[in-house]
Image 1 (cartoon, rainbow, N blue to C red):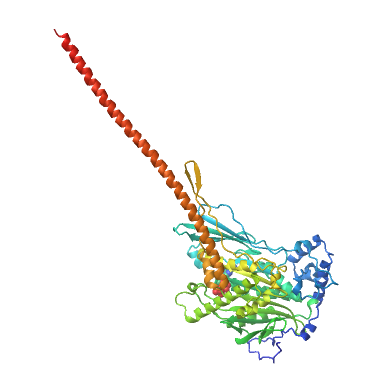
Image 2: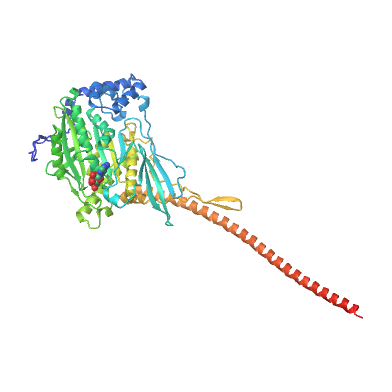
Length: 615
Ligand SMILES: Nc1ncnc2c1ncn2[C@@H]1O[C@H](COP(=O)(O)OP(=O)(O)OP(=O)(O)O)[C@@H](O)[C@H]1O
């Protein structure tokens, strides 16, 4: 159990109040955390839902209002945001009935929010063009407010990409579907394009502003925090794809928009007494460093309730946006960044901006994390002349992202244990995946052709996160639940688009479809994640590939046999014709001979007749 320490000395150049971290969930804290007016209101609204007081139309209307939620609406109609019950087994909210309690009814879900676990489905799409192959990875977006939202944001082509005429290989085909036209080369050096289609909750194009992104991704998380929950918004993507721009841009980052919104909401009398506190730290080389306290080393701890507490983190009370800017700029100056081949100002650490809502007794009301993950990168992204420090940083970044992937995979595959202790990053992020939490992942991608493999990796990663769906996914709460099938592992499937036809002997023999080889991205996955499971997956995929290749070769051999037979038949036909021609020529020659003999005989007869006539 973490207990408060003495007040640290504030060395920052700006005048703001500081307090030690009081994020402890001991008995006394819980006592102090009595339901706020807002909580009571949401309890009422969820009870209404439980008793089915709300009709479907009313519910849909309230959902629509909630989507357009602005502070005054919250003030007047707090019931407009119906609380969708979390999985009953871990529901911590006092407002919800416990299903196992015989005296209380199981919560009734309104029809439109009764969600089923969405599974990945592969859809083979029809033929496109002569040298393109399409693969589709589609998950139907949830209609309810999901526990995890996964979005994709595409950045514009940068100056260098424009100057080198690099094509944009990404295409947004709808508001939640993106296609990647990945250039590939066959074994016989033929160029072709593989089209990968992915569906997410939202896909944002390069013209989307951070404000509009905020409305659709982060706003529900802020509401969730006001309802007493934990929320996390994190950006994942390759280096230079726009994570920092999205999350922590000093002027337009989502964190800034969130605080702006929080201040608006705090003007409401029902939130009177709530205060905003901010902490800012980074995970660098496996260590947690306080960016607002001279990079002091921090230790993540778990309290008796399983909540993550960052021991020693200095938190600052934020009174205004100006204070926030000062605090943030101070912290940003402390952050580890450096120039890499792909980004002049590359983040070399995972940065976490923590926003806390505390009541007058300093008890936590709600918590929100903005996480700017360091970019996934390859050795080649760092350039040839990188020093050892940069290489070590890169290795550590990949290691922690791999640990995150491992946790997600473990949750995804219903394993009894998710290795959150695998890295400091996953220890911190644990809150995002368990308990009364909501998470939004923003996968940032670069649109240019040379980054298409990176982009595919990012989208596959995001797809895996997306499989951990919503409040109805029991795996987020009970890792021992085994009634769900393990989810499908996302592997590109391809369909040969043109099947050349050879016509012979009045029979059409279709060329068998050539199976696609493992894409480089999948192989890279293996190198990145060298675990037994991945090796098994990899071998399984290879077996499938080998089988498909065998079938293809068998089909090709059969076709060759047919072709050989046809050739033989043609040749025999040709030889017959040749023989006939020869015979005909011989006959002509013989008839010519016979004709000349006849002519000779005629001449002799004529001579004899002439002799007889002469007396
Ligand atoms: N949506 C966008 N619109 C305009 N410019 C963008 C956008 N996204 C990124 N950029 C620009 O691209 C550059 C790289 O972005 P940024 O530093 O945010 O990448 P990153 O993913 O955080 O990289 P790293 O992981 O190396 O830190 C910046 O100059 C940023 O201004």
